[in-house]
Length: 323
Image (cartoon, rainbow, N blue to C red; front, top):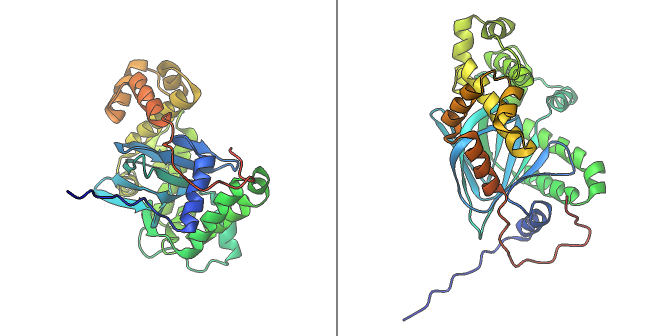
């Protein structure tokens, strides 16, 4: 009777270096803020079921593992061979493939629209408005230039001094690589108001700035220069939901963050995001997340507080310091 020998997982030197840096910079499951504002690291040590999420405009690079996203009828996948770009803030559903042996590891870089505008001016942008309405979210193959910039960013984040001096320029380079890449038109369109996508992007930015206040759909439509019917149709084309449902979802996601990260109770979080009725908040929260606020906070903390699995690896150089 023969015994099957399972070969250990092997990585090329660049990938091995990336995994070593993740073990130091983001050893715990969940999100880890880095020394650079707007750049966060993510780790999952086990599969995560399909659940509602909301991402700000960002570039998400997967270093290991795989995610699958669902926006309306659209299904997209992003893994270590692809990067994800969200040109507008979008709520969607996501599931994560990960294991103790190969955890999911990812980097999120917030899209700074001011920086993007400066880059377009420096590029003397002449492409104009895209011929077709772009998508608010898409995944694209990771090219060597962008992959190299991501590796240099991780190395810079390992040193507080390098993170302060060198990392901002590397983030600018990453935005430049995406902007001039295969799908950069979506970010360009988000800055213009000459097409429907850009006008909806402006409305989404206002919603995220004022989600805790009173938002009037008629006013949003008027500011976008659209009739109410056209605004509803174009809004749904971009977000796969209606304007008021988007507002509600935005409030609920922010409330969840307040409870998980800031320790607010459900009543305080509901009031902070603009709910006048705590019972209505609880009903709508359970409808979106499938659990009561208390149970969802417990689930999130249990999922994110699990310690990382041990792994035999090469020693990380002394200049690497934990954030």
